[in-house]
Length: 525
Image (cartoon, rainbow, N blue to C red; front, side, top):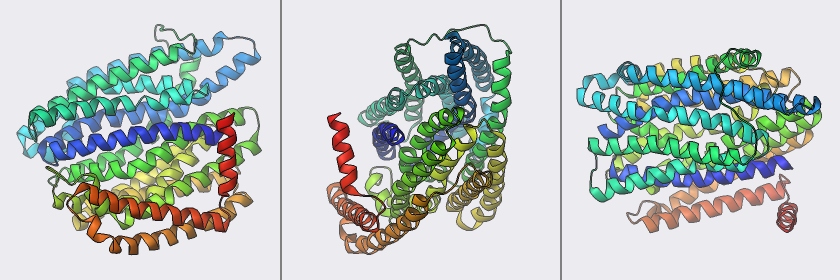
């Protein structure tokens, strides 16, 4: 199926990016640690990321991709090749103007944003001022990444997933280089490290935009820069995009609430960041890759009234997402400390930081399948140009998150925030899935009914091995030497994958021989 091919293209590129991201975080943990400079930089980087996810990756793509796909289909039917070009150019003009205005306002009001995002920093004038200046340096990253989101959406609609998927690797390459300089110069937990990291983000944004624009130019699509005007196309995008912005804004409140509360606990922002990075590893490879591929595919099938194919596509996407996510969630839940110890515990990242970060990672882990299912269900709404329903369910999620964060933080501190995030994720995923089913837009077919319980069984048996295997391999997993810990985790992970694959094979979740034959025939082709 073309869906799987495109998914693995995006997933493999995401895997490379996440590996480099791990190297980046490893170096940051070792050279900068979890002190005030790390907290200040992570808050500074979170602000442009918050707006990027709000205006670009979430709301914009959810509204833009289906409309762009429609303009292409109508242009072909009407033999009007300029229709899609005019639509995209009109959107670009308004989008760029809005981004420039937002960036200018943010640069002026940075102290206000930082005080809202991290009120705990107000008690430390040096830390607060550093966060303000680092935020001003990193904020133009939003401008670059938002334009990249638009170019990526068009490339994905054309079926060119590879170019957009490999772009994020550049950020990690540049940041690894910056951290290498920080380590070699011995800057450590000093403001100089924060400034180097912030300028690294600034440069990486423009490098990514330049490379992706060069790749986009190769499509020969005529994208022009016009004077911004409120045309019919722009109004339609706003009608779809505003609910998406609200939904994205509600979702980002989850992150904002966590950061605000965590800023009142020393190093909590850093603990949550490193835990988030590790559970984002499988989420990025599976969930985000699936969402990127699924939206243009579903949009095309629904536009052509191929509803059965659309339903089958979403069923297979759910099977694949769960098969790749459930065992990862089980492993992160059962052995979080061992994973953190291998990944980060060195230099300025202490054993105490491992314990605190591991506790947050375990809390995030059991919500991982929910976050992936949200990526599977959401395109079912966006492809039908429905951005309001996800907005309402995102509101349910944020209400759940705020309530549980406030209730659990006094008891569990930063771990309570991670627990609340997972609960909110399941609430959102259940609402999205139920409403799709109720509307008849997502019907579980026989294959999904058979395979999901068997995937759960395979995950439980794999979890039993991980639990007892980790105790058996404990001397290797806790050894100070990196290679010894790597060997221990390698044995634990390899046997876990073998058990999961064997159970899936024996219970008929998949047929390894058939998969091997398809891979072989594809490589020959």
